[in-house]
Image (cartoon, rainbow, N blue to C red; front, side):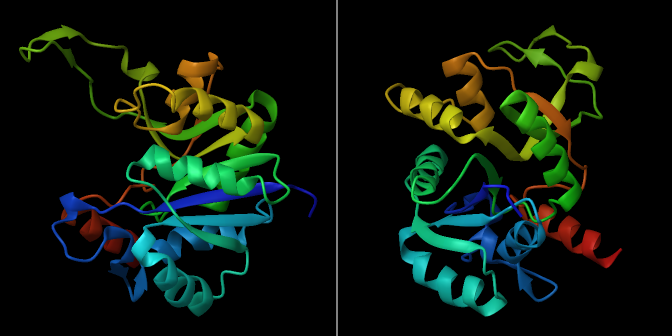
Length: 232
């Protein structure tokens, strides 16, 4: 394997909408934590050389001992503490990439357990060509844009509207430059990494097909759905 690709897996979220004392990435599905499934896909992918796991400051040791060591995730080269917000954790992961050979970086939510090798493969092909790509799927429902009063102002063409997922893949130097610029400004509106590249560098982000199963565990209902997926 010659690819110098690194996966940054984000597992620092508190998961307040889950209504659980246990952080969502550590909740179990069929006897394994959600984070186990998120890491396993990158561990098994021949396209990924290293994994950087970004978690909360208080859970670094737990992740090393009870996740990485316990399940034999040998590609995890470092487990580091993230920041207060998601973008802080992403930047911490990007900084850690400077210590290892890395050409392309795949940023993935640790609470999104159903990424597949096929998704990684499609993302790799796209990032090599475009420099920036995001996994996602076309929306199934009609989307309405409303004003501050809740009144509909437009209805975008459904075939052009996608829901973004992760992983999102970028040329390392490109995403680092974009984040360094963004962190000098207000970041409160940033909800994914593609937005940073689009806004700061004007680089088009190519969308590749993910899966409708590639859900993010956010609420108790999502956990029920995830368990159903694994029982199929």
